Image (cartoon, rainbow, N blue to C red):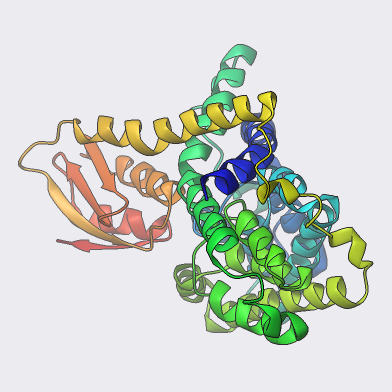
Length: 408
């Protein structure tokens, strides 16, 4: 199992590190707020623009919610917001690179194309059934433009590195580790003929994958090793692709918030677009595209044989492991030693699933008048707020960020 885990990690780590670097550059240097001004109005064009904006962004299905809700509340149409919600979690520069490393170029190319097509279709359908007024002020749109990015080039480079190799690692690191461990367990302990029956009927295996993938939470990168392990055990490439699309794109928390913010009809179309798109592209892969494009067994035979680990990927794996330890362990230890007075108030926060959610809640509460310090416990689902502040203002600030809050 350890050999399998190390082999997968070595295959992914160089590409993941490259993806983190590109993600940091996009976050700091690409003016997302300027692009967001084009997201008002109806029809396929705003949906297309929103999907093109969302495909490269490395945000998970819950991390994208505050951004999409902010876009929606500042004038973006329901169709554009839905398109952004569908496209963004399914892929990103980091997951595209990691997909190429483990599953090959065909999966890496089809994945963003599927995300784009599904997002545009879903956003357009929502737009056609949307009866709201369309005269929103496009100048007010803002897509989570960071307010802590320095103005100088050197400062921006530092901010890009901090975001890519600290913030983003903390955001998807836990799910990446979970995906690798699950994949290693499947690879080693699941018998080779376990999925033989499902493998003979791709549509049945796709439906099973949907039942598992839709309610669960997994990031776009963390789903890759799981998909690889399932293919190596006999499931069709199309079934693995269903998991790659549906798993990161939606979960119970995201569906609930979309339903509350944009209505039940839009939420149903949002979910339906993801399901139809995932199964549709899965069937295209299994029945229309050349099977050799999606052959991964020979490419990753080293996962099953005790081959020596190459130097450069091993160094990349060591760097990635150090970043994961720092972001997931050391930073949490530092937070525990922060000072909060005994007069602080606690609030129950629901809807948080990752550090992106945690950061969005923290930022919103910090903007409330009278708040002097904030500690948001992601695992415990609570916020400890210090200072002479209005509790109702804190609750409203959390709701404006896309989450629910109440006094404890």
